[in-house]
Image 1 (tube, helix red, strand yellow):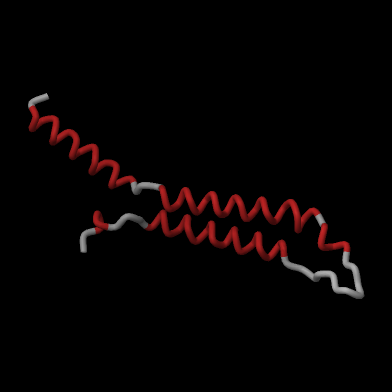
Image 2: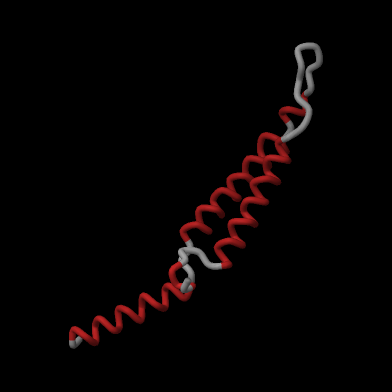
Length: 92
């Protein structure tokens, strides 16, 4: 199969993997002991769990959106070449 038929290139897959790892790190930062009915644990309201971890997850998810929407460089150059051929064929 020709490489130009793929929507993603290796950079897209690498970005997706890195961003997925960032999201997993964010969820791990949110994890920790919880409170029970008998014991209150104030750690559930720590800055790491309610501020840092959600921001880390958000950065990972935004990065994933970019990785999915990113167009491979060779596809861009192929489109430019096609436009040039069409202009030449039209006599412009």
